[in-house]
Amino acid sequence: MLSSTLGGVMEIQKFKDSLVRAEPPADLPPPLCALWHQAKGNWDKAHGLVQDERNEAAAWVHAFLHRVEGDPANAAYWYDVAGRAPCANSLSSEWRDITCRLLETQAEPALEMDH
Image (cartoon, rainbow, N blue to C red; front, side):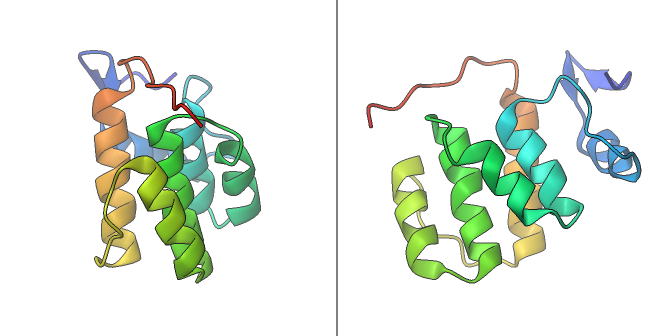
Protein backbone atom coordinates (compact mmCIF):
# COMPACT_ATOMS: atom_id res chain seq x y z
CA MET A 1 0.00 0.00 0.00
CA LEU A 2 1.24 3.47 -0.70
CA SER A 3 1.80 5.54 2.40
CA SER A 4 0.81 8.96 1.10
CA THR A 5 -2.94 9.12 1.23
CA LEU A 6 -5.44 11.82 1.93
CA GLY A 7 -8.20 10.54 4.19
CA GLY A 8 -7.39 6.97 3.14
CA VAL A 9 -7.49 7.85 -0.55
CA MET A 10 -4.35 7.67 -2.66
CA GLU A 11 -3.27 10.94 -4.23
CA ILE A 12 -2.86 11.17 -8.01
CA GLN A 13 0.87 11.91 -7.78
CA LYS A 14 1.47 8.83 -5.64
CA PHE A 15 -0.54 6.80 -8.13
CA LYS A 16 1.63 8.11 -10.97
CA ASP A 17 4.79 7.52 -8.91
CA SER A 18 3.75 3.88 -8.49
CA LEU A 19 4.04 3.41 -12.27
CA VAL A 20 7.80 2.83 -11.90
CA ARG A 21 7.05 -0.40 -10.05
CA ALA A 22 6.62 -3.78 -11.68
CA GLU A 23 3.19 -4.35 -10.13
CA PRO A 24 0.36 -2.00 -9.11
CA PRO A 25 -0.37 -1.28 -5.45
CA ALA A 26 -2.11 -4.34 -3.99
CA ASP A 27 -5.16 -2.51 -2.68
CA LEU A 28 -6.37 -0.97 -5.95
CA PRO A 29 -9.87 -1.91 -7.13
CA PRO A 30 -10.06 -3.36 -10.67
CA PRO A 31 -10.90 -0.09 -12.49
CA LEU A 32 -7.90 1.72 -10.96
CA CYS A 33 -5.70 -1.30 -11.50
CA ALA A 34 -6.78 -1.25 -15.16
CA LEU A 35 -5.84 2.42 -15.48
CA TRP A 36 -2.47 1.60 -13.90
CA HIS A 37 -1.82 -1.15 -16.44
CA GLN A 38 -3.00 1.00 -19.35
CA ALA A 39 -0.59 3.75 -18.29
CA LYS A 40 2.18 1.15 -18.41
CA GLY A 41 1.17 0.23 -21.98
CA ASN A 42 -0.56 -3.05 -21.18
CA TRP A 43 -3.97 -2.54 -22.80
CA ASP A 44 -4.85 -6.26 -22.79
CA LYS A 45 -4.27 -6.61 -19.04
CA ALA A 46 -6.22 -3.40 -18.40
CA HIS A 47 -9.13 -4.57 -20.54
CA GLY A 48 -9.20 -7.97 -18.87
CA LEU A 49 -9.56 -6.32 -15.46
CA VAL A 50 -12.73 -4.39 -16.35
CA GLN A 51 -14.49 -6.37 -19.06
CA ASP A 52 -16.45 -8.57 -16.63
CA GLU A 53 -16.93 -6.02 -13.84
CA ARG A 54 -20.49 -4.76 -13.41
CA ASN A 55 -20.21 -1.27 -11.97
CA GLU A 56 -20.17 2.25 -13.33
CA ALA A 57 -16.47 2.82 -12.63
CA ALA A 58 -15.48 -0.28 -14.59
CA ALA A 59 -17.78 0.67 -17.47
CA TRP A 60 -16.21 4.15 -17.58
CA VAL A 61 -12.69 2.71 -17.70
CA HIS A 62 -13.87 0.14 -20.26
CA ALA A 63 -15.15 2.99 -22.46
CA PHE A 64 -11.84 4.81 -22.13
CA LEU A 65 -9.89 1.69 -23.07
CA HIS A 66 -11.92 1.24 -26.26
CA ARG A 67 -11.27 4.88 -27.07
CA VAL A 68 -7.53 4.22 -26.62
CA GLU A 69 -7.92 1.20 -28.89
CA GLY A 70 -9.47 3.38 -31.58
CA ASP A 71 -12.91 1.75 -31.44
CA PRO A 72 -15.31 4.69 -31.02
CA ALA A 73 -18.49 2.63 -31.46
CA ASN A 74 -17.54 0.22 -28.68
CA ALA A 75 -16.37 3.15 -26.54
CA ALA A 76 -19.72 4.90 -27.07
CA TYR A 77 -21.57 1.79 -25.90
CA TRP A 78 -19.53 1.61 -22.68
CA TYR A 79 -19.85 5.35 -22.03
CA ASP A 80 -23.61 4.83 -22.22
CA VAL A 81 -23.43 1.89 -19.81
CA ALA A 82 -21.42 4.10 -17.46
CA GLY A 83 -24.02 6.86 -17.73
CA ARG A 84 -21.51 9.27 -19.26
CA ALA A 85 -21.25 11.19 -22.50
CA PRO A 86 -18.39 10.17 -24.79
CA CYS A 87 -15.27 12.16 -24.03
CA ALA A 88 -13.72 14.53 -26.55
CA ASN A 89 -10.69 15.49 -24.42
CA SER A 90 -7.22 14.14 -25.11
CA LEU A 91 -6.58 10.58 -23.97
CA SER A 92 -4.08 11.78 -21.36
CA SER A 93 -6.56 14.31 -20.00
CA GLU A 94 -9.31 11.72 -19.79
CA TRP A 95 -6.97 9.22 -18.10
CA ARG A 96 -6.17 11.84 -15.46
CA ASP A 97 -9.83 12.81 -15.02
CA ILE A 98 -10.96 9.21 -14.55
CA THR A 99 -8.04 8.35 -12.30
CA CYS A 100 -8.57 11.40 -10.07
CA ARG A 101 -12.29 10.71 -9.78
CA LEU A 102 -11.82 7.04 -8.97
CA LEU A 103 -9.07 7.78 -6.45
CA GLU A 104 -11.45 10.23 -4.73
CA THR A 105 -14.20 7.67 -4.55
CA GLN A 106 -12.29 4.40 -4.07
CA ALA A 107 -13.48 4.12 -0.46
CA GLU A 108 -17.11 4.41 -1.58
CA PRO A 109 -18.97 1.16 -2.33
CA ALA A 110 -19.34 0.36 -6.01
CA LEU A 111 -22.80 0.72 -7.48
CA GLU A 112 -23.81 -2.57 -9.05
CA MET A 113 -25.42 -2.35 -12.47
CA ASP A 114 -28.63 -4.09 -13.45
CA HIS A 115 -27.27 -5.59 -16.70
